[in-house]
Length: 116
Length: 114
Image (spheres, helix red, strand yellow):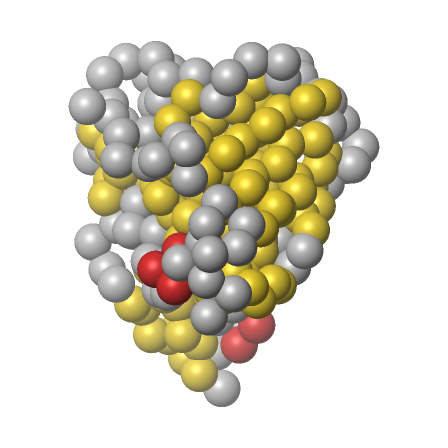
């Protein structure tokens, strides 16, 4: 149980275009979903926290207009990187907490974004 | 501020030898502590957690961790390492005052040689 999927697993896009990444909780309802960014061999950097039906809360330094987060249901959150640039290339990982769970986050497999 | 520290960037161990990955924490109140493992180009997999109860916590893949309040530590251990244990390991603390966020350590790369 507690499986989180992400789609796509890898995406290559051209500079200036937008890319949408989906995060789904497959077998549970997620009260909260988190979006992280990870650089090679580094820790996870939390970008934002989203709760179903409300606006995402962004961490300091994260541009909300560039990284649009929508949490439309208890099983789906999306991250859209708008007007992507090469410096946005990274590994993006989502996680979710289980409604009624005990504090741990369940992570998706990640999405490798490359902007050319 | 609540945080965890992983003092070692990398741990090298021979297959069959004991493996220890260190983590210390700094929290106000009772800590909720976690260990995750990440394989290359993959998300994080939950290994184990300490919320309350026994100080020795057993988790997935033969790993265990010992919560030590006096030393504010939560070291991850495995009695006999496998080559397949080579991965990036993260310690994390649950932030009780921040919407359930986790604060991750910097990560420790474990390399198990045959």
